[in-house]
Image (cartoon, rainbow, N blue to C red; front, side):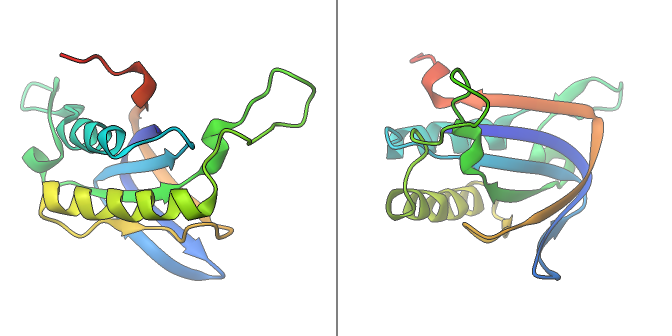
Length: 152
């Protein structure tokens, strides 16, 4: 799994002119799921997202996590995070999980994040043509890949 976390002061997702999810302060999380991903990857990534300390403390240092500042999450599925671009100019997405695998993991990520945060997770619509609006704060953008996790 790959996730792009963007610290935002506001973000929203619109599908066919209707807002499907929006937040104020928090993370816009773009989530890519590949065939090799497991429940362990999901659990590790969810813990990392919720625990990521990139919100300012009273000294302006990035020391606070989502819960510390009452922030929210807008979670967007994005298979293009697994684009392969080595050959030619047209990206290949063969590493991205097919919907029958990706949708259950995406839905499990939503429920896991809701359990960890105790808050409703704002979302897009899996597979839809989504329009994402955001005001990146900082900017702070973090890239995480479960293939890079350490086992300690």
